[in-house]
Picture 1 (cartoon, rainbow, N blue to C red):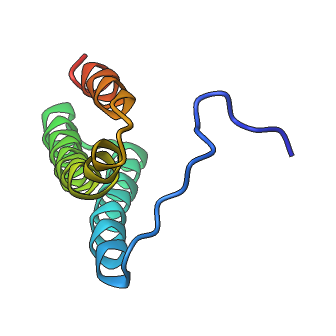
Picture 2 (picture 1 turned 180 degrees about the vertical axis):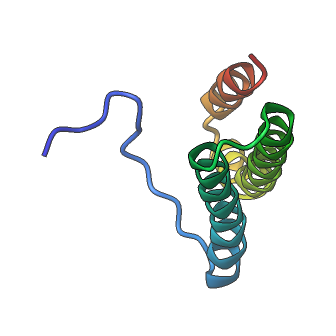
Length: 100
């Protein structure tokens, strides 16, 4: 299996509670996207669809905020304590990508 060029080899152990919360947020967005698909299939009015797309965007932004907070509290903090200052550069790059 070929490695994705955009993914790192690093792994992050997540607690059951953290996984549960993150997956709950993703599943909520997934359900909203399925709803939008149904709206398109049923010829829903454009502004109604756009409002639902905005809700999905908000749900994914909420997911990103939660995941970023977890990343800062664990991975970044642990790397800095271990003297891996490049964790700061990595975090800055991630934030730049997210804030496009």
